Length: 182
Image 1 (cartoon, helix red, strand yellow):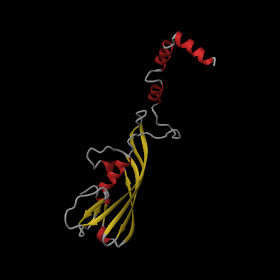
Image 2 (cartoon, rainbow, N blue to C red):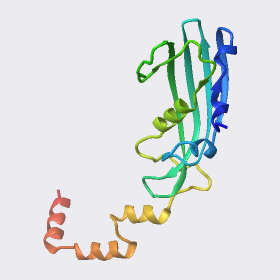
Image 3 (cartoon, rainbow, N blue to C red):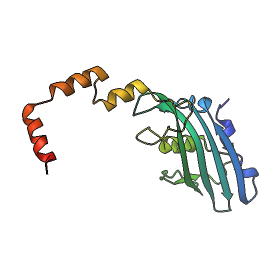
Image 4 (cartoon, helix red, strand yellow):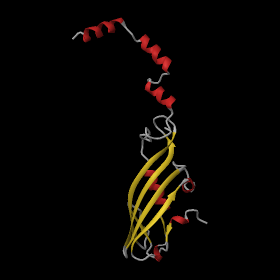
Protein backbone atom coordinates (compact mmCIF):
# COMPACT_ATOMS: atom_id res chain seq x y z
CA UNK A 1 0.00 0.00 0.00
CA UNK A 2 1.20 3.50 -0.83
CA UNK A 3 2.23 5.29 2.40
CA UNK A 4 1.45 8.66 0.78
CA UNK A 5 -2.16 7.75 -0.10
CA UNK A 6 -3.39 10.17 2.57
CA UNK A 7 -2.13 13.01 0.36
CA UNK A 8 -4.43 12.01 -2.51
CA UNK A 9 -7.40 14.21 -3.27
CA UNK A 10 -10.45 12.43 -4.76
CA UNK A 11 -10.96 14.93 -7.59
CA UNK A 12 -13.77 12.99 -9.32
CA UNK A 13 -15.88 12.98 -6.17
CA UNK A 14 -15.67 16.72 -5.52
CA UNK A 15 -18.16 19.25 -6.81
CA UNK A 16 -16.97 22.47 -8.42
CA UNK A 17 -15.92 25.17 -5.97
CA UNK A 18 -13.42 25.70 -3.19
CA UNK A 19 -12.43 22.87 -0.85
CA UNK A 20 -10.07 22.98 2.15
CA UNK A 21 -7.58 20.25 3.06
CA UNK A 22 -5.16 20.16 5.98
CA UNK A 23 -2.02 18.03 6.29
CA UNK A 24 0.38 17.56 9.22
CA UNK A 25 3.92 16.91 7.98
CA UNK A 26 6.40 15.11 10.24
CA UNK A 27 9.39 12.77 9.93
CA UNK A 28 7.23 9.90 8.61
CA UNK A 29 6.40 11.98 5.54
CA UNK A 30 10.08 12.63 4.69
CA UNK A 31 11.01 8.97 5.16
CA UNK A 32 9.17 8.31 1.89
CA UNK A 33 11.52 10.51 -0.13
CA UNK A 34 14.95 9.15 -0.91
CA UNK A 35 17.90 11.39 0.06
CA UNK A 36 15.64 13.98 1.63
CA UNK A 37 17.56 16.98 3.03
CA UNK A 38 14.94 17.14 5.79
CA UNK A 39 14.54 14.37 8.35
CA UNK A 40 12.32 15.85 11.04
CA UNK A 41 9.68 18.53 10.93
CA UNK A 42 6.47 19.83 12.41
CA UNK A 43 4.71 21.59 9.55
CA UNK A 44 1.07 22.42 9.01
CA UNK A 45 0.00 22.56 5.35
CA UNK A 46 -3.29 24.21 4.43
CA UNK A 47 -4.44 23.45 0.91
CA UNK A 48 -7.18 25.41 -0.80
CA UNK A 49 -8.41 23.38 -3.76
CA UNK A 50 -10.47 25.35 -6.29
CA UNK A 51 -12.13 22.97 -8.72
CA UNK A 52 -13.64 24.18 -11.97
CA UNK A 53 -14.64 22.35 -15.13
CA UNK A 54 -11.50 23.26 -17.09
CA UNK A 55 -8.76 23.24 -14.40
CA UNK A 56 -7.88 23.09 -10.71
CA UNK A 57 -6.12 25.83 -8.75
CA UNK A 58 -4.25 24.65 -5.66
CA UNK A 59 -3.02 27.15 -3.07
CA UNK A 60 -0.53 25.67 -0.59
CA UNK A 61 0.15 27.58 2.65
CA UNK A 62 2.70 25.97 4.94
CA UNK A 63 4.04 26.96 8.32
CA UNK A 64 6.07 25.18 10.95
CA UNK A 65 9.61 24.09 11.77
CA UNK A 66 12.24 21.78 10.30
CA UNK A 67 15.00 20.20 12.37
CA UNK A 68 18.39 21.21 11.00
CA UNK A 69 21.85 22.31 12.03
CA UNK A 70 22.44 26.02 12.63
CA UNK A 71 24.92 27.51 10.17
CA UNK A 72 26.14 29.95 12.83
CA UNK A 73 26.92 27.68 15.80
CA UNK A 74 26.33 24.09 14.49
CA UNK A 75 23.69 23.34 17.14
CA UNK A 76 20.56 21.38 16.24
CA UNK A 77 17.68 23.85 15.88
CA UNK A 78 14.01 23.85 14.94
CA UNK A 79 14.18 26.35 12.09
CA UNK A 80 10.89 28.22 11.49
CA UNK A 81 9.67 28.20 7.88
CA UNK A 82 6.58 29.47 6.10
CA UNK A 83 5.63 29.79 2.46
CA UNK A 84 2.76 30.05 0.00
CA UNK A 85 2.76 28.41 -3.40
CA UNK A 86 0.21 28.12 -6.17
CA UNK A 87 -0.16 25.20 -8.56
CA UNK A 88 -2.40 25.05 -11.64
CA UNK A 89 -3.64 21.67 -12.79
CA UNK A 90 -4.80 21.52 -16.41
CA UNK A 91 -6.25 18.66 -18.40
CA UNK A 92 -4.64 16.96 -21.35
CA UNK A 93 -5.08 13.56 -22.97
CA UNK A 94 -1.47 13.66 -24.20
CA UNK A 95 1.55 13.61 -21.93
CA UNK A 96 2.69 17.19 -21.48
CA UNK A 97 5.91 18.36 -19.79
CA UNK A 98 5.45 19.85 -16.32
CA UNK A 99 6.19 23.52 -15.84
CA UNK A 100 7.19 25.32 -12.64
CA UNK A 101 3.65 26.07 -11.56
CA UNK A 102 1.51 24.14 -14.07
CA UNK A 103 0.98 20.40 -14.33
CA UNK A 104 -1.17 18.37 -16.69
CA UNK A 105 -3.31 15.37 -15.79
CA UNK A 106 -5.80 13.23 -17.66
CA UNK A 107 -9.39 14.50 -17.47
CA UNK A 108 -10.30 10.95 -16.39
CA UNK A 109 -8.01 10.99 -13.33
CA UNK A 110 -9.81 9.86 -10.19
CA UNK A 111 -7.26 11.17 -7.68
CA UNK A 112 -4.53 13.78 -7.47
CA UNK A 113 -1.66 13.00 -5.10
CA UNK A 114 -0.12 16.25 -3.81
CA UNK A 115 2.65 14.69 -1.66
CA UNK A 116 5.35 15.42 -4.26
CA UNK A 117 4.38 19.09 -4.43
CA UNK A 118 4.20 19.47 -0.64
CA UNK A 119 7.68 17.94 -0.42
CA UNK A 120 9.08 20.30 -3.07
CA UNK A 121 7.48 23.39 -1.53
CA UNK A 122 8.83 22.56 1.94
CA UNK A 123 12.34 22.00 0.57
CA UNK A 124 12.13 25.32 -1.27
CA UNK A 125 10.96 27.10 1.90
CA UNK A 126 14.11 26.15 3.82
CA UNK A 127 16.44 29.16 3.58
CA UNK A 128 19.90 28.87 2.11
CA UNK A 129 21.46 30.07 5.38
CA UNK A 130 19.96 28.14 8.26
CA UNK A 131 19.97 30.70 11.06
CA UNK A 132 17.26 32.58 12.91
CA UNK A 133 16.92 34.96 15.84
CA UNK A 134 16.84 32.54 18.77
CA UNK A 135 17.39 35.15 21.51
CA UNK A 136 13.83 34.72 22.83
CA UNK A 137 13.91 30.91 22.88
CA UNK A 138 13.99 29.31 26.32
CA UNK A 139 16.29 27.49 26.52
CA UNK A 140 18.39 29.05 23.80
CA UNK A 141 19.56 26.24 21.46
CA UNK A 142 22.91 27.85 20.61
CA UNK A 143 26.29 26.20 21.05
CA UNK A 144 27.77 28.92 23.27
CA UNK A 145 31.30 27.50 23.06
CA UNK A 146 31.26 27.74 19.24
CA UNK A 147 29.91 31.30 19.39
CA UNK A 148 32.64 32.38 21.84
CA UNK A 149 35.22 30.82 19.54
CA UNK A 150 33.85 32.78 16.58
CA UNK A 151 33.68 36.03 18.57
CA UNK A 152 37.39 35.67 19.39
CA UNK A 153 38.43 35.36 15.76
CA UNK A 154 38.83 31.60 15.88
CA UNK A 155 40.82 31.50 19.14
CA UNK A 156 40.04 30.36 22.62
CA UNK A 157 39.87 33.14 25.24
CA UNK A 158 43.46 32.58 26.45
CA UNK A 159 44.92 32.56 22.93
CA UNK A 160 43.14 35.83 22.11
CA UNK A 161 44.61 37.54 25.20
CA UNK A 162 48.13 36.33 24.36
CA UNK A 163 47.79 37.47 20.76
CA UNK A 164 46.60 40.88 21.93
CA UNK A 165 49.69 41.26 24.14
CA UNK A 166 51.98 40.23 21.28
CA UNK A 167 50.41 42.73 18.91
CA UNK A 168 51.41 45.75 21.00
CA UNK A 169 54.06 47.57 19.06
CA UNK A 170 55.71 50.73 20.50
CA UNK A 171 55.53 52.49 17.14
CA UNK A 172 51.76 52.03 16.95
CA UNK A 173 51.41 53.12 20.56
CA UNK A 174 53.18 56.42 19.76
CA UNK A 175 50.97 56.98 16.68
CA UNK A 176 47.87 56.35 18.75
CA UNK A 177 49.01 59.00 21.24
CA UNK A 178 49.41 61.51 18.41
CA UNK A 179 45.94 60.84 17.02
CA UNK A 180 44.38 61.16 20.49
CA UNK A 181 45.92 64.61 20.99
CA UNK A 182 43.88 66.17 18.18
